Structure formats: C-alpha cells, structure tokens
View 1 (cartoon, rainbow, N blue to C red):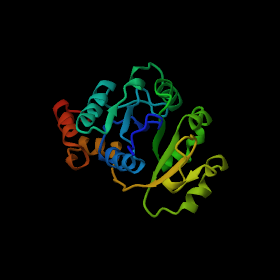
View 2: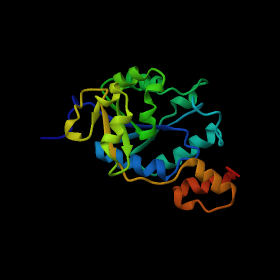
View 3: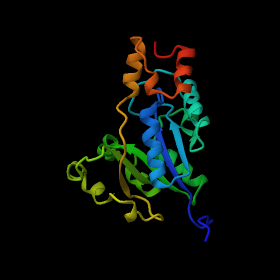
Length: 219
C-alpha cells in the first residue's frame, strides 16, 4: 500500500525568527526536528518587525537573502515571505491564520524553544494559536520533564506530549516535547564576535558567512 494518500493532511513544520543572521543554531535543530516529525517541508519565516524587539541589525532585505541562501541549499527549507510584506509587527497568530486559509488540509507544527513556551501565554491570541497548530518545543536532552511541567501554567501543562506515538495527527493544540541536539550559539553572540573581528565561520553555513563578509554586515 502506498504511503501517499491525498486524504492525509500535509505536515508542515514552521520556524519563525528574526534570523539576524540565520545560523547553525537555527538550522541544525530545525532539520532534526522536521525529520523527527516526518515533515517534508519546513517554512522559515523571517519577521519584519519583531513585536518584542526594538529593531534589527541587518535590514529585512538582507535577512531575507541570508534565509534564501539557506533554502537554496536544502529541499527541506522553504522561505516564507509573508511577515516581511507586512508593515505592522509580526504576530504568529496572523501568520498561522494565513497559512491555514491557503492550505486548509495541512497540519501545522510550530517549532519553538523552551523559553518561548514558558512565555507563550503572553503571546498575542495564544489561545487562537493553539486552534491552528501544534507546538513543537525543543529542549536539551535529559532536561527533567517535571521541572518543565512545574514552570508551566495548567492550560499548557495538560497539552504536553513526550512521545510521537501519543500524537493525534488530526488535532491541534498539542505541545510536543522534542529532545533536540543543542547548538550553543546565538545571533547576538555572532554579531558581537563579528564586531570584534573574531572568526564566526564555524557557526554559519558557508553561503551565509560569505554573504556577511561580502556586505560587511554587523561591523
């Protein structure tokens, strides 16, 4: 029997961020998580105006180009421009609503880190977000589940799933916990290293490193 079935919803993983710049700390855990889910598509969604940040260092065009370079190197990644086309802050709920309207049969899985989950009830229309997608939260291997549960509000704690076998593919509002291999680097650290002349090539895809060097970003 073929595993291809038109009645089975498309599984799409989503990763948003400022990507200023995009680096291996974004890419490698996202790839690992997508493969774990069985997702054939992973949308990278650069934010135009991040609601919780004052400004970006590279402009929207430059950040988009760096993400596009990454997407060109992998069939898994798709550049999603929609937030860059807005003239207002980038809210996840708006993005998910648009994608769901365009692909009503798709099952959406929004990837985030543990810090984002802990602050999730402060996000705009967080209850609506949970009607549109499942959350996939990357944590460090061996992180005690009890510690996470104790830090969460009851409305989120009751939705936790630790095993893909528990996942109900037709539902939304589930919070999958994935122990992903951490990559200890951040965009903030990379920018600081570039400013001081330190080598950052080990933290970036070669195409992104070359672009930053060519355009003298973050100097």
